[in-house]
Length: 113
Image (tube, rainbow, N blue to C red; front, side, top):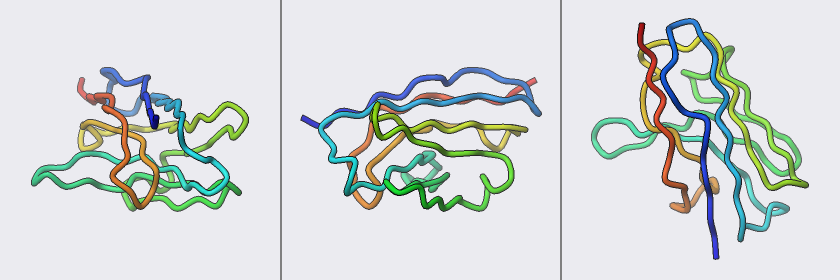
């Protein structure tokens, strides 16, 4: 059974930092690129970042220079370190097996002073 569980969301002030974590199971990590997405209006999703099993990383435009994605293939986890967050980063973030609709429930990030 596939399961992805995110944690680490919360309320943070502009310019602050936050670390999101995702623990997953039932996914073959060796053939899976993992990703962080953010829900956006219109029932769409925005790619924040993705990372392959071998460590190849692609960032979405909003994340470049501020966020860092990493994964631990021994623990089946993928993290998103968010630095210098801004109000426009507010939203529900969730991890997913890239290229699929397999996703977790998500974790809320609110950037507000």
